[in-house]
Image: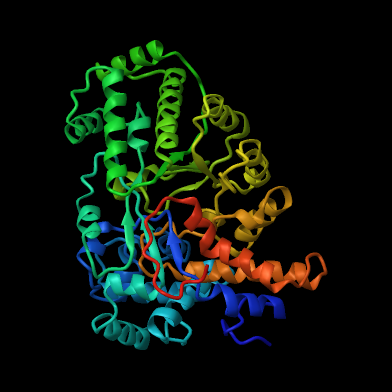
Length: 476
């Protein structure tokens, strides 16, 4: 029987063991999409206790705790941090079969050197050990990042953000990690959403452009794209919960925008026309600047309206959407391709039934120049599981080039989430190892090692235009 989460956890054959320990394990990390706070990185935050580091803002854990019957008081409420930690410890044994169980113990092992199994009985001792370490040397935010062998962090930032902490971090000489902004203009596309007009006012201030017309609006967005570019940004991200493509002439969309500025609510078809035109406009800008564009598709957010009004968004009340995406997605990509303005693009769907749809679409738009220009993004959110990641990789390998995959990201708000890269790397090594063991690919460790290095790090390094300071001895 294999030891619980021992050295060869998830590695079921000799090829996998060799690929992981000799090749993948020490590869650096490019975290090209996450929700970490640049302010906390700049200020080099130290956590008061393990609850703050582990449970604050982690809606994955919150969902599990609610499912385990834990009252909200001990999740997002006013209970003490110790009480919240004990509530999580009571929940952990019930998460067996969920990746949270393995992630929890990977984080305890890799960051804290704690190999005890977390449960209600072990919780007090683990609380004491973890907090002693967090309050000592080597556990500030920057030290956790460096310890995780991270080279680049790409945060998620609103176009109206000042990027002050990115600017300050750019001037840091002693922190060997690039922290760059990711352009996330969702609030500028959701024209009917509450708060849109207030956001337009913020955009006006941030861009220093008076916004009275749709032309003004596009000029302001372009100014902010340029601002992000000058701050080191080379990535955009769009949460497209419903994939739409409803093309219209500029004049029609200009009228729609001006109606909204006057306070009118826009009909659904008009909303789609506005979103489509603006999205294609932005895509052209990204292409001109050499950016990568990310589409996160098919999430169904804020399902529980009572809890949304109480706690707000991103609190664990989201799920998978089942909208059909193939036709509108192809039309958006083709609209850009027709003008030779399709940027590097990464596509994710929260619905795993879209795996083969996306895996097949991407190769309709490869340009024969940039390897893997259009990417099937790594398994996302509810798919960020053993089965979900394997399903995504198998779909990609069946109809595309697995070897050109840009690999894993954290999509996390926690500085302890980098162990998810280890989990992912063990899975890719085991998958390739199975192909070798079954005689499906040759036992060519030089070739397989290059492919593993690419998926772990090198493909992303070549794909994005991040400025990376490579320490001596980095694998190439």
